[in-house]
Amino acid sequence: MLTAATFKRGLQRGWSTTWELTKVVVPVYLGVTFLKYTPVLVWITGACAPVMRLFGLSGEAALPLVLGNMINLYAAIGAITSLHLSSREITILAVMLLISHNLLVESAVAGRTGVNALAMTCFRLGLSFLCGVFLNLVL
Amino acid sequence: MPWGVLWEVPWKAFFSDAFYGSLHNVLMMAAIIFPVMMVLEIGRDLRVLDRITVFVAPALRLLGLSRQATFPLLVGIIFGIAYGAGVIIEAARSGEISWRDLFLVNLFLSTCHAVIEDTALFIAVGADPWIILGGRFLLAVILTCLVSRMAWLNARLPITSAK
Image (tube, rainbow over all chains, first blue to last red; front, side, top):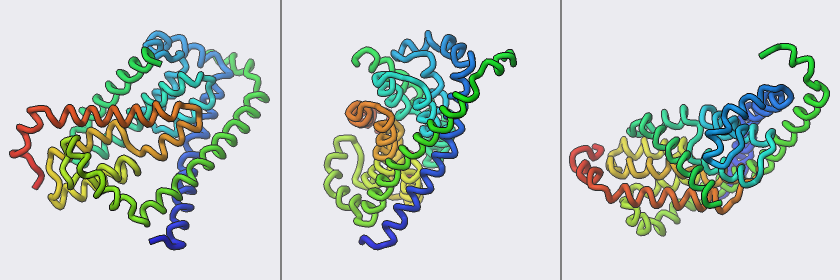
């Protein structure tokens, strides 16, 4: 049944999620923007370019990919918005990240339901890479 | 890093970029998250999931899942792994869901979960909605269908079903 409490909870969850997100997005955005103003981003881009090319992504896309898998999607989004990626790149990145992200936390959660956490992590990463390669071929 | 490069950073441009960029980012996310959370809470209180469960249970047979797995699966797809796992752990503890269902639900959710919030965020930054939503869902369906028909999974069924 809908009551005032429903809307109150909606607002609360909206607020707490936005706050959680701000705590992650802002530092990541600042960090990546800072890297953009130094030669570091160029080095990272160069080093990652050969692997990223498999997915049709530029080298700098390695940043959101790593951040998303290690931390969470909010961190990845912070990085995506501070880089200049094409919409094709963003779509490929989005699919890869939506399949595998926040691996440290989510695998631990999945592990508690009785499924092998390490196997789940490898499975998600593998599937994410396969999808990246696939989308690069078909898009 | 040779620290000399720090002198060459155009600090003023950096600070204005950093400030306006973060502000824009946070406001854009808030504009997505508030409505999404409101819809999710309204859906929860209207017990939309209970109604959908009745509808989709037959379709889930295709995935090789039993009726008991429907609710945890739907919660995970819509609300995400954290909520889904809560319901799954509860179902596993009370013994109403088999190991086989548990495995398949986890398989499905590992590829496709929290489809409303996460998808909305990526659409906001410019990803193609059809590909990121449809593609992921289809992938999860195909994978679960295939794995549920594998012999080793079914062979394991009688021995390790959850108590």
